[in-house]
Amino acid sequence: MDIEGAEYQSLLGALKTIKKYRPKLAICLYHKPEDIIEIPHIILSINPDYKLAIRHYTTCNWETVLYAY
Image (cartoon, rainbow, N blue to C red; front, side, top):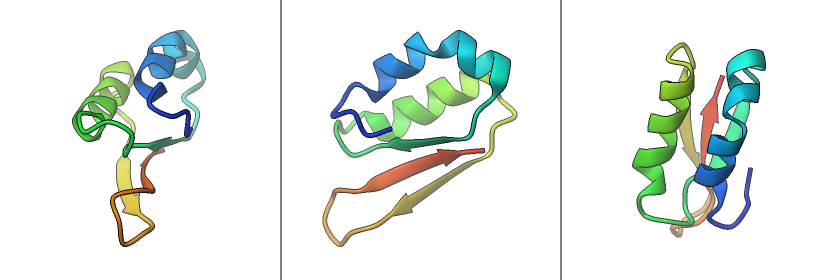
């Protein structure tokens, strides 16, 4: 999910679907400074059984992705 800063709001909108189906997620964390804290928090509040991993793909501050599986 790379939707230019609307990742948190989209997770809220998909809350029931994520709870029911527990999809694997890949969410960008670099659009807003608070995303690196708030997005993992909302994912774990939806389902605490998710395992989380963060991967950074560039030498600058872009392309940091949170994986939930």
